[in-house]
Image (cartoon, rainbow, N blue to C red; front, top):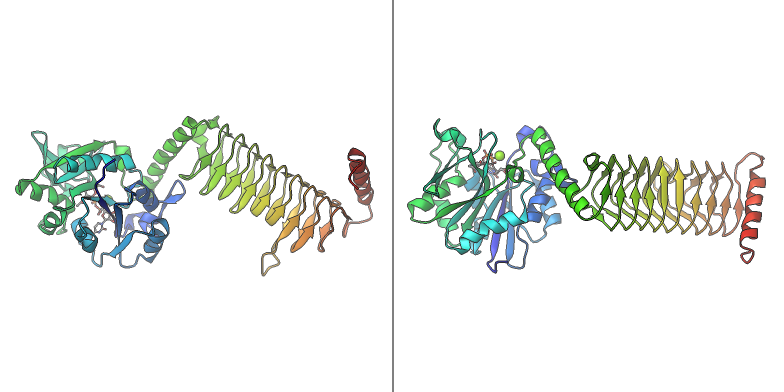
Length: 451
Ligand code: UD1
Ligand code: MG
């Protein structure tokens, strides 16, 4: 890698009106993360690499997201939206610190890769003043056209200013530019606004560099990598490109997917070895799946960690804060939230386990509900190691079921149950009590040593 220092400026001051949304454009998610997060992740991030994000005057949410994602980033506000060159100059103080390479990228191109930034920096090491990322557009309408003469980049012409002949050019400006950091400011400051939109266009730096006898070059990439997002339709297209990338990477890493096109992943999903994901699974942000785990069809998982050889679904919903131990089994129509289920726990059918800790090897019967909410606050449920919760029980939190305890089916438990106790609460006098006793007898027989 290069030993040169860099400053990456991310332009994100645009209104994004075509998204028709109250959310600032760069915060719309792709694969579970804001577009901006993808761009920031691709930007150089070594010790000598700085970052600046240019935001609009009412973009407090973008500033917050930036601080969370990259606390080291400088945040600059562009008060008036007078064009891309004007936006870059909002970060003048950062530019003036004089990095070797100045990189400019738009906040709405989430598919850009770190390799492309590295490729753009190579010509600068070789003496070019400016490198522009170009691509062959299937439909170039709206893009700036790259005017190349004798293999050298001469100028960039915005669509609105282009002649009919220039509009036939399909080699377009992707919007990412790399400048020699020592020459950048003097080039950008010379940019005027004599064009169809009366905006200060960053692309004019190319013609200015050439007039000053400096060299500008084009580095080409694929259209998929530089899709700019202006509309919800383009957001959906970017999502599908990103999903294809994530599925390919997962398959290459050894994940088994029977129908990968039906599986949705997040950019930060982590897999162990020999993981299997059945068709129609949705994985949101913050999920890790350990070795040998199987995710059955129609499961929905967000911010959860899944232990080795665990089994989830079909039709399971793991919500944020779920942690499954090794070999745990979550069956159909089970929902979990802020719950730790230790190794070997079984919750096989139709349950809600929220704000709970379930000890190793406990068995939670069908229809068990942790009643965590009293209309005012959330309360915790503790289920001890090896406990057995009979079907259709309501555990009214805060409540603690002791290790090895047995709760008869249909119970509504409102008081703590001591270790190894039998609890049958508010159940009619049915054979449930008998069932509890029988269970205890069988358990004693199976393990005579345990009293
Ligand atoms: C821009 C390029 C065009 C290129 C295309 C690729 C310029 C002048 N044109 O056109 O050559 O083919 O992208 O998608 O650079 N922004 C600000 N402040 C401003 C203006 C823009 O922060 O005052 C930001 C926007 O938020 C956006 C980016 O700069 O992230 C690009 O602006 P946009 O208006 O989308 O430029 P395009 O017309 O798409
Ligand atoms: Mg654009």
